[in-house]
Image (cartoon, rainbow, N blue to C red):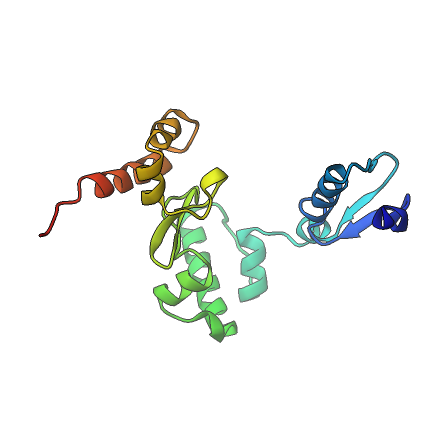
Length: 180
C-alpha cells in the first residue's frame, strides 16, 4: 500500500519497463489485493525509444561497424559480405568476445541452444526445458517421470525443429543400449 501511495497517479518510465517492470508491478498489486489502474497514466519505455531511433538492421550495423553505406542490401552476396565485414569489425572492436567460433557462440549465448525456438537449452551440458511448468528440469527426467508430456508437445503447436529435437532426446533416453 505504501508503494501504491508513493506512485499515486504518476506516469511511469523505465528501461524495458513496459514488458517487465510494470506488468510485474501490476501483478504484485493484484496479488496483494490492491487495484492499480493504468487509466490516465502514460508509460514511457526508454528501450522502446532506443530501438525505434537506433535501427537494428544489417545496413545500420554495417554503417556503425564498418563506416560504410550498404548498397544492394537484401541481395544474398552483398548481405553475406557485409555480415562478414561486420563480424571482423566486432572481433577487432570487442576483444573480450573471442575470435573462434566456439568463443563467439559462447559469448552470444548460442552455444546452449538445442532447438531454434529455444524451448530446450543446455545447462552444464544437460538438455533442460526452457519454458513452462518444467522450466529448468532435465528433459530426460521429465520423459521418465511424465512420459505423456511428450505426446502433449507432439500434438501441440510447437515448431517442427523443436519436435524433432524432443524426439531425438526421447530416442536417446529410451533406446540407449546397456553397455554392461
